[in-house]
Length: 455
Length: 64
Image 1 (cartoon, each protein chain N blue to C red):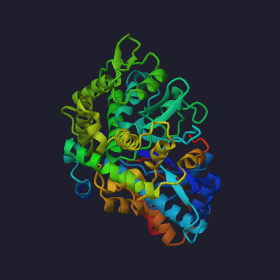
Image 2: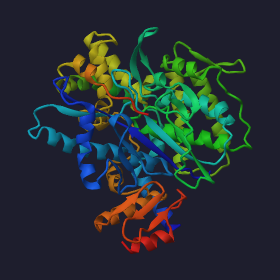
Image 3: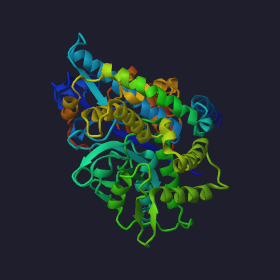
Image 4: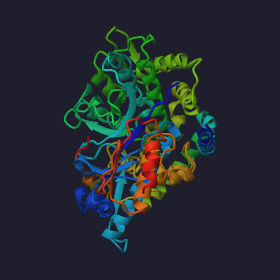
């Protein structure tokens, strides 16, 4: 199977709280968090030594975009490195706000919805061959993305006028309005078609999936990106015949699936050809198709992992989904909330439930509830701590990110004035040398070596 | 290719026996259930004393 370049962009939520009260607004908290970045880079939009991008996004959300990766375990390490980097900035901001450490705390959440229903995302990027025909995406990829919340959803207790208070599979399901379009904040689609390949535009496109939840779980992160990438390979391979799974009403399907986490209400989605399937059946059919597709093809270790993890997850879901509490975010959270409700005799609409729902996503290593469970060994770990620590300062070695990361590190060491984006490396001296890196797969380049020597 | 192989090896050591991780382990689930009460007790200490206010004040602007 061909290599694929992918990456994750995470928008974090921030709050500052003193005895439950908000004393500093989120805009100011974000500005204080980015104080150190602005001081060193003169901008709140910087590229780092590990090839990633760190910036303040729409709505003052601190955002971290991983460097381009071609291996899922690298991606996981790079994504977790973002949490570490953000926490370092938060610690420093915390010191700045309250040097004595007594008056209130900054919380940084890796989730997707605030208490007022504002949503922010975890976007996935997949590098694809340039092909403007997206009909196979509608027929196969969209139904996959809508039903993958079974394993990729981060779960959330939601109250709506029509449905009351219930546990939803997904954080984002209620905040998406179209399947494929170029809108972002106005009317968020599942796939955003804004054409910014960050690579040679004649060869590449970048598929921008903005439907997904932020995952705390290693397993869910890898399965989400890995399964999506495999489905995409099949969709792109026009020689592969795929059974049309086009949904009759994709937005209704997205929301309906989210209301039936355990599948015990047998909620189904309707296809345009009249078939009625549960989300599990859709996933099962797609997983089986992928298993067939990869047969006889040369898979990398991470791809092989995804195929077996996907199958094992679906099989367990059919028997007893709760056992997957060590790897699937919504199940971990549901267990936590169920236990809380049982032991305190409270219902889902109790504020303490909403608090636990939030603190599950707190990125602080000891305050965050997911992180506490991880620390106690209750969750499947797919990346070692030292690999994450290395990813904070080291870019992925097998993609273009290696060149960017090396350039940034060296230029900083030599105190050179430079500008960098996904494609360009530029020295702001009198010669103004610029290197354009149009191939994200290329981790070595003679032009780069020559530029590097002059640094 | 030697470089690729080296990277490949390092990744393998670091990825904490991935195939083993696929295996679903029900005993682990029992341990989790036993520990959840303890965890919820512990978080009472770190929890904000005013859950309602904390949650209500968690308001951001929308992102993308």
